[in-house]
Length: 148
Image 1 (cartoon, rainbow, N blue to C red):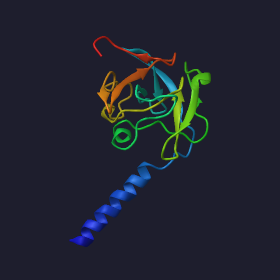
Image 2 (image 1 turned 90 degrees about the horizontal axis):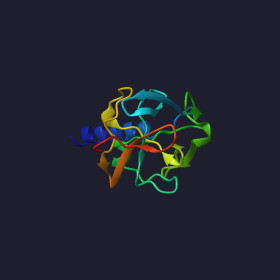
Image 3 (image 1 turned 180 degrees about the vertical axis):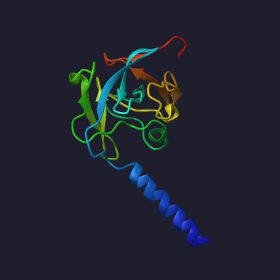
């Protein structure tokens, strides 16, 4: 029984190490139009969010927060496509040493509840982990829909 538990633990830790590994290429930020307007999405068309608890371009989201709101990580300078302003793209170092993409000094995140559905915005206006989460517009500011 102890051996089985140890194998499960090692397998789980290996999975975490893979999930937390650094990317092998530059991230892509592009645009998509939906009911909120023209929004920022990653290279797989997943909606990108800002976290209002982040200050001075630094992420305040780690641990279970980052599990639910995965940071957009990059290797090197991120690529801007479509209506994304490359002058607003940047990066910040996370506490774990990885490099996170920023837009207008806002660290960028996806949301697991969007379940890789392109354009899904289920994280819009969510209050979690000590602050609210918002979709970003191409101007680098949060988009607030009515009632959020």
